[in-house]
Length: 197
Image 1 (spheres, rainbow, N blue to C red):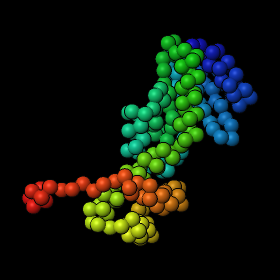
Image 2: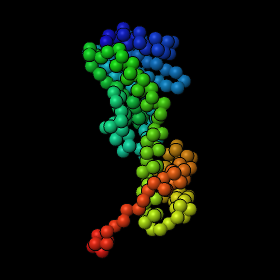
Image 3: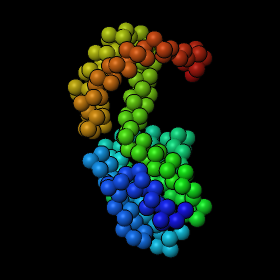
């Protein structure tokens, strides 16, 4: 792939939103996104970047984000730099095909579009499963468990969710997940010899 290929591919796809800064930088900026394409100083490596959210919004989900880098992302990865969560693709320019470049841009755009919602949902589900497990082991009903979650949230015991921009949605998500997952989670029974030590 050559710098001319990059220019042509980006201009074909984004037309006037593509700004070319020869010989080593391109920027696509629309009301929805900002995509940066940069070449290394020696012009042998290409890096494509897209800011996703401020790192403060991603903070509660960093474990899930790192896990996604390991087994969910394909060509692109999540990265943190200057208090921003980025989607990043890097590749040797000489061996990069136009189809690979286009696919990487597609993946980065999808990462931007979905934001951190998938990580929010995964974290809520994992925590709700733990709560259901504990509630069922104590013989609590769904209604009593719902009241406990409401009380914990009101008292700030779920502060990491309450302090983020997802705080407004958090309680509704907890309640919805609790109702959905309640029938699926069965309490683990501790064998008597383990319980008695």
